[in-house]
Amino acid sequence: MNFKKAIDGVSSVFFPKRCRYCGRVIEPRYDLCENCKNNLPVISDPVCGLCGHSKEDCVCKKIKSHYSSVYAPFYYEDMIKTAVGRMKFRENPALCSDFAEDMYKVFLQKYADIDFDIICYVPFSPDKMKKRAFNQSELLAKQLSEKTGIALCGAVRCLFDIKSQHSVDGIHRKGNVFGAYGIENENEVKGKTVLLVDDVKTTGATLNECAKMLRIYGAEKVYALTFAVAKA
Image (cartoon, rainbow, N blue to C red; front, side, top):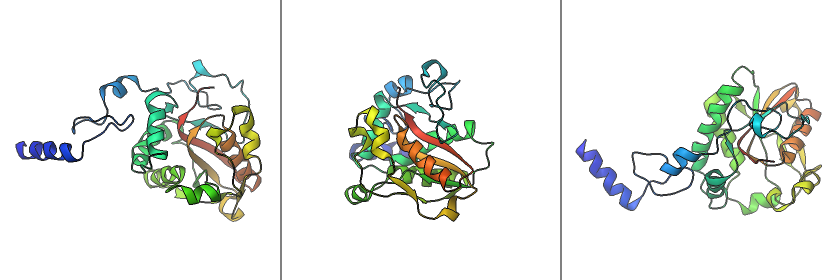
């Protein structure tokens, strides 16, 4: 026991353990700092499946989308927003494993009784694929595929370069992605029940456009799962 503590002490000097969300240095025996442990912006039940918000925060007015429901463990704010930034913009793909764990817990709560055929993910545009080291949505989908045993499918494709959604005003996001996605192989999705994965849902425009194409090409049902949802 003392030897293990000594090893952990040496490792913490050269490779300090960091909080999985905010990135603060913490003791090796913990996964979260005290602030994150006590103040995570958890999306609490009951949840509106149409927008992914807690019912008390729901403002979607029951507007239906091409996906049947969307759920996430967290709101996209505070340390969760920091966590997503660490993953995407500091190119830290290892965090996807932690985030997928949180998403898997929600999957078990909300989707365990659904017989999914495939897991799809929101793809990058051709230009973004060249600039970024990895697609975080694809990595999350891979992790969830391994945890659930549901087959991973890369059928959704981004057909042309579009502006990043975070750089576009909310009212213009639907137009920014309109017609931008397609399905590479119709036979991969026809008649299938699909779990569609992304890292963050903001207005829902990207998820909705991808779900629309999946339905057009014959998917029976599309359900969405993300790591975080932005409050309206």
